[in-house]
Length: 508
Image 1: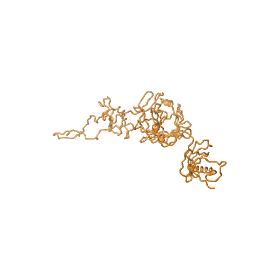
Image 2: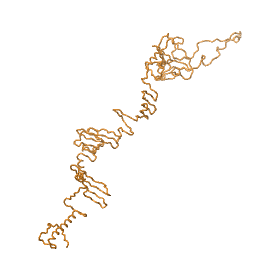
Image 3: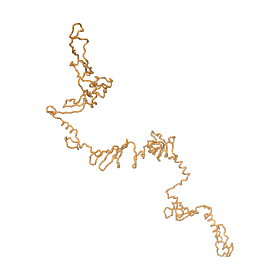
Image 4: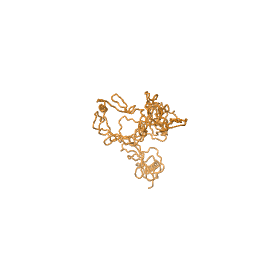
């Protein structure tokens, strides 16, 4: 038997051997014709299959390639190092009917990563770069500004789109816009109504962390912005913080660790102790305490309260305060009986105190000066005037400081500068003579006037020696006076009585 010669062609008909055909060998023998046709078809199909899905080279498949398997993996793409990508779709047993598919990369016998496409409802579009760029441009012209809009430099584009804006505190609808803002436009309106924004400060602002919110009303009108509390301008819930400005609490504020108010180099600290609540001054370390037993103390020293008052008099206790009624009772009880002071044995009200004239006493309704009145002159054995006295040395003193003394003596002893001062009497080295005041012994004297020393008019006798004298003639005489008579000098530089030097002062 010989091999059939296979032709790479598709033989249309495969003949069958019928009764009466010769069973004789040969190329064209009827018995070999069916075998030849089958051989031709086999070669043709092999060639076609290898040309469409081969194991090497470039293959071109025309038409549909249908891979039917109930396993996840449908196609595997193997690399030279043994790693591979596999394309898989959901198997029938998962209940997804192939609606989900993945690209899975495997290496070293384990999955490295995957690109997963979950099942979706409806239709979805894959975002190619050209599509993203085209739709980004569309969004920019519709509702979204991708780049920051410099509204400060150009207001022609309006302020109605979502996006980023730099207004640098421009005015809009009579209100100030944030320096920079993330603006959110309402998706269902076109006039900017109900828009909202979050704004920021930047640059050399005194508060670079300031955060604000902005709002537009139902008519698209900008209605202003409000500050958002941050770490810089709000009260934090933890950690240390310096809070500026006035804070108003409309409900109770609880400070579990106490409260400290500081300034001017000191602080006022409010704390709770084991048995009290206290306010402490850090400068003096003194504290005011409200005790749990209801008492009030100052650095543990009790402070008297109204509950400690008493109307009683002569209580032998230091725990009570005398009321004004008790003081009046004690005052009334301080009346002394007249028999003790020569007032006929009757009770009188007596008060002693300092007043404008000096130390005064009031007996019932009669007032008398019991102290030394202003303008009085006295002598002291010391060289320094007592309190309230001035040396009577003619000095010029203030009319306002010593107004009472000026009212008493005026300019009698000198005008001073004639405006702000006046002179004190100068009693140094002088004897005092009482003012005549009309008695006519020391006539025409004015109170306070000075008088020089003087002798009262008088004469002296002359002693005569009895002896003979013949110088007047031949007859002797009994008395002879040759010159004017004069007594011999005697005494010192002034006429004075015995005396002692004391310091003369005037009551101011």
